[in-house]
Image 1 (spheres, rainbow, N blue to C red):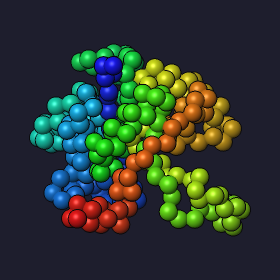
Image 2: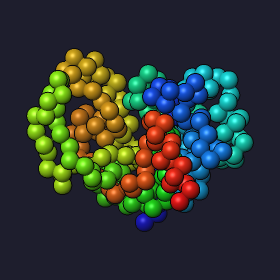
Image 3: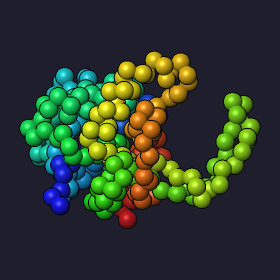
Image 4: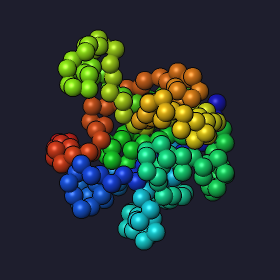
Length: 247
């Protein structure tokens, strides 16, 4: 069977407020390169990924920083389109999916797969991408993740423990999150139509898998990612990333 087209959506529109830095975290330097470079480099070198939509903040899109100082400077030829993100993560994903839905790419992806990845996760590997590809071809929706190492407590609003889920059934979810193109496009269109109802009902969408689960009733397969596939959120995470690269 021929490989279907694979498009990466790399999200880099966040402000990174928890980094306590004047520079958005995706542009902070890690070993001399912007943090975003690492995810884009993995996409560029991948044998699976055919093209990429990069979602950035509106200011750096308008001033051309990302296009000139990252995409052009480092020769990321797979970046087909750069779009501005929105206030919430799902808004940013939707802006990228609109490009795909409208066919506004050099080569349309109407019946392939969409790999949605956080630009703040610098340790994406070809092995993770391959495992996700194998899973999505079988299950139509999958996400990278790893079993938790720590005991997890469910707490109430005042911080008291309510219950302790069985650790063997709890995973920490990562990216990429990968879907059949028609499935994720339909799920996000439905989300845009029903987001006010979801807000009224107190349902907060936190990742793409939740969109597919909640709006389409689809099951999502968990696929082994890596304990190194961390998301850079705080200054401590940058120190951990430095250690990983040094090793």
